Image 1 (spheres, one colour):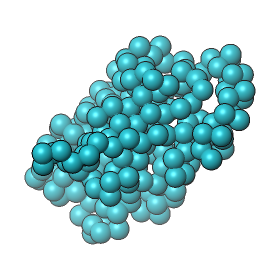
Image 2: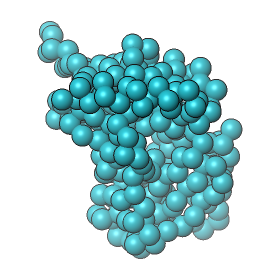
Image 3: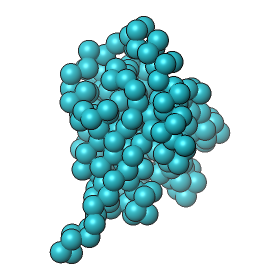
Image 4: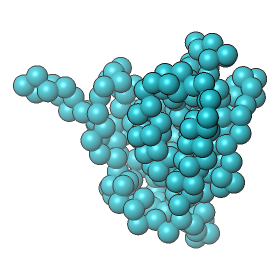
Length: 224
């Protein structure tokens, strides 16, 4: 499993003798970072990882500015002498130390573009998101469900992971609260987690690419 091999290389860095960082909040790495790697373990995926004296930050690159925001902010607010920034390449299994200039440049490179309710990949619109929120009930805060209308069911695994991340941010932006939970995410009526679990990990089927061109007009109508 690529994610686990990458995690072991990250662990070798922070556990080497005399390593000056991550003296506290180690759960960020051993629990949260490990799970985040597992939840985004797909061909072509890269990450940026910040190690501080207290805790870590980890994000998948190339999805959208809102996904990178926390890591970008962490680079700005934390003393460069008290943190390290790494580029993680899932396919190559490499963990490379970056300077701030290189890190900032990578944080501005995106495969996806997000509009008010649309998601495009490398210039082609691939989904229109319908965000549905529950109401406050008996003191229970609202939660969100996102229905992605795509005109297709087959996507590369990395795109499914990207859609899942972006759906969460759509819900957060709709309620202006980081604490709003996303209950369900659907792709054309199918739970996205079911699609991920059953995915054979191809890039994308040629016949799906042909169908995608036919559905492009319908997506534009949905987004209007």
